[in-house]
Image 1 (tube, chains in turn blue, green):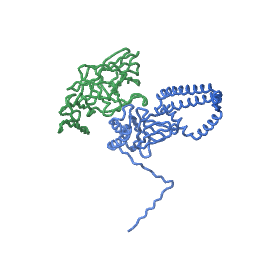
Image 2 (cartoon, one colour; image 1 turned 90 degrees about the vertical axis):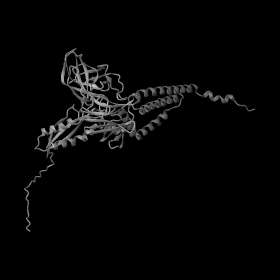
Image 3 (cartoon, chains in turn red, blue; image 1 turned 135 degrees about the vertical axis):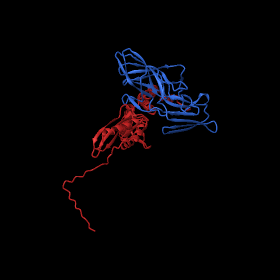
Image 4 (tube, one colour; image 1 turned 135 degrees about the horizontal axis):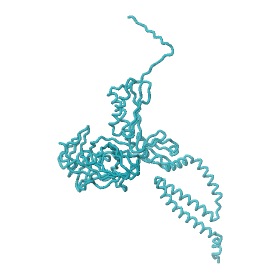
Length: 281
Length: 239
């Protein structure tokens, strides 16, 4: 009778590398365990200086790297040659590196922005000439709400390489105004009129005091520069900016000080002969 | 008819160029109108049990630009090393109209600014603070008080080894408490101690009320969150 040869059935079990399997399992389990612990620690540390989604993604990325290393080590313990896999991985890495160059650049720029913190959500900023309130700083891009209400998305690489003006970073900001008066007028009288307007405006700071002086002898006017400091909170500066120039102009005009129009003197290199013809009717 | 002081507003009255009128509506509502100085505020208050006029911090309402008040003294005070003196100064206060309902629940209906409003920067633009600007005489005795003023008793203590010169005092409305005497315009802060640590730095500590019989201003919820440290640091100069 043909019976089942148990010796043949279990023969393969003698060829299996049991020690390797147990070792690989231990490496994998320990790797995953260590990965989870490091993920939690990384999250707790990075959440202090990164936004929550970024901290979570960073911790997760580190976890997957550790699991990958543990998996590769486990395969090594099983006696599987990883050289081919590593070479293939390296080539794929190079290809992906070139293909995802911009994405990687944005990613790292985003991380640098998190660390450097040139602005925070809610700040009024100017990036590459675009003004707006920062809505969100994600890992790839920074989103602004423009002053005209339009949402602007700027890649982090561009943000990182740009000149950034953060209007909310300081408690006060300076506004400059130029007022031209006629050459025949008394600048000191104009100073007094301007100072009175500034004194009456609640948002013009008393300290630092406003600075008023003749800045330029212009082509058709004596230009007075008025420098005032205002609170930078919210859009208070904009309110002052809108208010002041007209109020100063009105006060100067009311005080009888002339604000001249632009005058041009035209000079001819050669004498100009003007022929006047008289028509006799 | 001119208002006589803080407390129940009744049918209203006049104060600092404003005329306040509170009239009965058809039911249990009241019509609140404030007119004057080019401003008109009109509101309907439903079922108020009482409408009071109360002093309030001059920075928190209706717009919170800052929580600080910088009081410039009209004369410098020279304090010797380890010296101590007590002075009184005046700070500006606004007038708030509180409407009370059942269970002492209340709302602030209106805030009257009766002092000129100006602000200043204390410290550098990036790290300093914006403060409501005020100027005060120095009084050696408790002065008489007009509407829109509160008196602060300041104890100045010089811990430094040399004389110090003091020309301004920074107060934080988040810590400052206001008290008032109903039926009068008398309003006070708690006792304040200014300890100078150097010729340019000082710490301001906020103590108890001057008189236990004074009525404290009830803070609207959320207006002044609790603070761990009840002191203000002056780090950018005393003059």
